[in-house]
Structures are given as C-alpha cells and as structure tokens.
Length: 318
Ligand code: NAD
Image 1 (tube, helix red, strand yellow):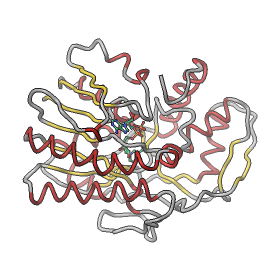
Image 2 (cartoon, protein in one colour):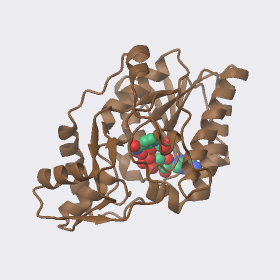
Image 3 (spheres, rainbow, N blue to C red):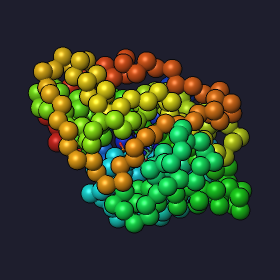
C-alpha cells in the first residue's frame, strides 16, 4: 500500500507514519510544520519507504504516482494552537480538506478525515454516540476548530455520496502520548511540564470536569482499521475511561514524584464539562478496543516530555 499522511509530522501523524512503515507501506508525509517540527519525523527521513513533502495543503495537494490511502490529519488540534491560529485552522479544515478529497478522487484512493469529539461541542448527552448532532457555539472562540471540522465532515460525506470516493471519518477523543509538545496547552503536557518544573499545576474551574484519555498507539490502530474497513463513519475513537482534571493532576504529581501543588484557575469559554465516547460502533464494526493501560501511557508520555524539556528545543518549531 502507498499512503499519504497530511499532518504527518504532528503528534498523531508521526505515530501513524511509523505504524504504516512498520506494516510495509510506502508513506508520503505532507506537512508545513505549522504546529510541529522536523524533530518528530527526523528518525524516519532515511527510511527507504518514507518520503517527506513540505507543503501547505491549503495551497493545493499534488503527489506523484499512485496512492491507495490518504489519511487527512493536517490541522491545528490543541486549543492553544487553534485559538492563536484561527484563520489557518478554518482554512485547513475547509480548503485543505477540499484539496485532500480532490486528490483522493483523482487517485481513486481511500480517504480518512480525522475529525474530533469537538464536533459534539459542549455535549448535553453522555456518553456521546455518533448519532448525536452536538451542541456547538458557532461564533465562540472555539468555533474556528469545531465548525471547521464539522464542515470537513459534511464535505467528506458529500464526496462519499456524490463523487463515489471511498471517504470516511472518525471522531477522535482526547489522545495522549509521546511527542506531545510541552507547550501545546492540553491538560497532560501542561500538568507534566508544571510538575517537572516544580510549578503549581493549574487546574481550571473546580477540576470536576472530565476527559477520557486514549493512548496514541491504540488510536493509530483504530485509524488503520477504519481505513481498511468498508464503513464511512462517523465512528468515535477514544476510551470510555473518564478522569476528572483534579484526579489527573494528582496522578501526574504522583508519577513525576513532584512536590508541586494544585492551583485552581478560571475555566476557558465553552470548555466542555464532560467528554466520554460511546465506542459501541468501533467495537462492533471494527473490532477495535483501546487496550493500553493509562498509567503506562502516562509514564511513556512523561519520559518523552521530560526529554523534550531537557533538550530545551524551541517549542513547536525547528
Ligand atoms: P498536531 O498539531 O500535532 O498535528 C497536526 C499537523 O498538521 C502538524 O504537523 C501541522 O504542522 C500540520 N498542519 C497544520 N496545518 C497544515 C497545513 N495547512 N498544511 C500541512 N500541514 C499542516 O495535532 P495532532 O494532535 O497530531 O492532531 C492530528 C489530527 O487529529 C488533527 O486533524 C486533529 O484535529 C485530530 N484530532 C486530534 C486529537 C488529539 O487528542 N490529539 C483529538 C481529536 C482530533
């Protein structure tokens, strides 16, 4: 198989490239390092079946030769990134996704959009199943991401319905693992950085809000399985295991053996109260189930973040 991975230098994309190479595929990784850097894929550059194309997918997406599968991951993903890059986020979710679907149609390739649990906004039902239409504030600060992804979902389904593209989409819930950036603003890297630096861990609100945490290896397995399946989705990928932010902060303090305290700070606007996927469809249609022990995953993530902090690399750029 020859696969294209847009956003392949990012956190999830770099793990996906590794997984595809390990299974014998040829991989074309496309990225413009908007929210990542060469450091995530440096170890793959000499691989004989790996090719890197530095490209902004909003400018058009051209790849020579045949393609069997196109994984479209390119998009800022952490709130800190999409809030500082609102127009880039809207553009890559709309124009970028359009170009990616055009390429899939031209090459007769399967297509997978990595959408998000943010499509459900601040959900009013728990857990969220795929038939829930969501509760999104269309004009709030987070809308640049949520609505871009919702547009991408509509576009993917339109190509599937009317252009005969084998296009599909998954909604990814909070995923964590090595190669998250210490400054990406998401809870785990933030807490780990603060704990390792002996700073207070800043928990927003009263810390009772929950997230479900899926380890990146499990998630990447789900992406590959979805691409190989005949289903169009949407299909939720995530773990139903919920953790409150307060418990997560305490857990990280324990695992890092840190003397840090916890400090409560105001919640950001439209921050969802609860997030938990219903993964019945993924179980039934793909036979997919996250299996990594969350604590083991946290240990791997802490090691990676600690190495990154020690290297003192400029975050998010190289
Ligand atoms: P990331 O920021 O680490 O990776 C995104 C990659 O896309 C980066 O390498 C970035 O440089 C690249 N990119 C952005 N705009 C681009 C453009 N115009 N042209 C080319 N490349 C571009 O984020 P991630 O956490 O790896 O997320 C990957 C995908 O998964 C995203 O689409 C995101 O929305 C989705 N997702 C992630 C999570 C999560 O928990 N990490 C949850 C839900 C959905």
